[in-house]
Amino acid sequence: MFEFLSIIALALLLGLAFFVTVTLHELGHAIPALLMTRDEVTIYIGSFGSIFVISLGATAYSLFPNPAPRYTSSGYTVYSDTYQIFRLIRMKHGRY
Image (cartoon, rainbow, N blue to C red; front, top):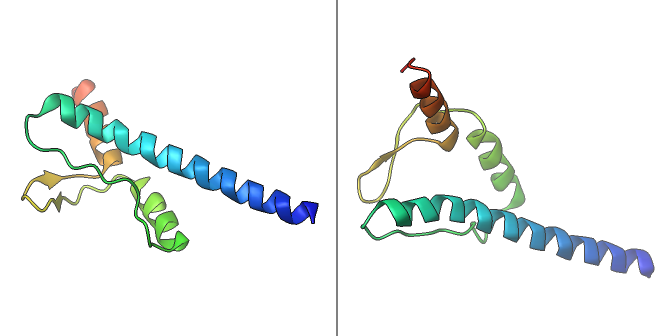
């Protein structure tokens, strides 16, 4: 019985840790957007309803810089976070 309660407690703790991590990550996008634009800013916190495998795949995909642009619903061009980080590093070193 104690083992079952330990597994439940661990699952709840991991779920809470995941929620806090995702929230802090998204705030890392939202706060600069709020400070640097006067436009309306929409914040998405996670994706309820997606299965776990999709989340892992999206995480793995986002670790590699992808130069292919994506487009927001309002028509803005955006790039992956890692690609933008690499661009900033290259710009800082004068190689862009």
